[in-house]
Length: 258
Image 1 (cartoon, rainbow, N blue to C red):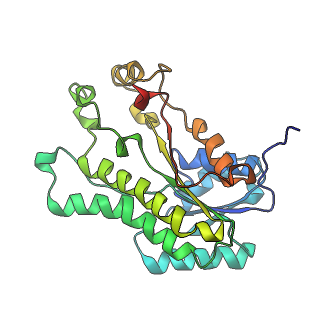
Image 2 (image 1 turned 180 degrees about the vertical axis):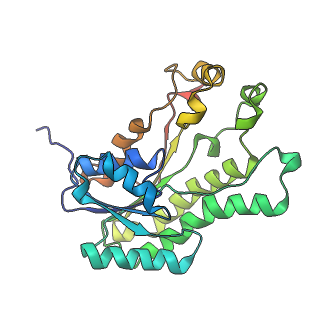
């Protein structure tokens, strides 16, 4: 018998849930019945998402700076006070500084690792006191945690160069997912990593020659659309995904299959 995937009665916390990819994840969770708490620093960005969301009564903002342990802890406590529970954590937000390896100093390299890997660990650690047995953790990685960038893409487009700390941190995030999948398995908490391929932001997508280079490198011949991430996030968050854990799932149009 076919069953519709639903997240009714589930409470999801999504870091950076108003951003380019985060908005699509938030909206997918909402459509499937979840109550969504967006954790972030910009209430203005949240309000822009809220205005473009049909069932916004189930969409909530919680102030959170993922670089600060106290802020993360307070955000989870605020969610518990408002919703009474937390079922799903999606680590989507990150912060980064980066450029060509020759120009990337130690502080900026470390800043990218902190903002992309350490911040996700911080959120997982603080969420453990709030997630029930059977909860879900979904980390948003990158295909560049599995494969090297094709540097030929950036020859004519150096402004979009992919720095070394980004991929290194995303590779660490995939391993962190495997670690916690096994550490939390006795609580039936699943932990997975979703690694998107090329999902350029709207401003980047205006550069047609750059997008053409990306399109040539995917099996499907196109860049990713934010809504392409929604389905896999909902699956992993739902009861239908309860036996999937410790995986790094590439959503990349076939880029890493070549």
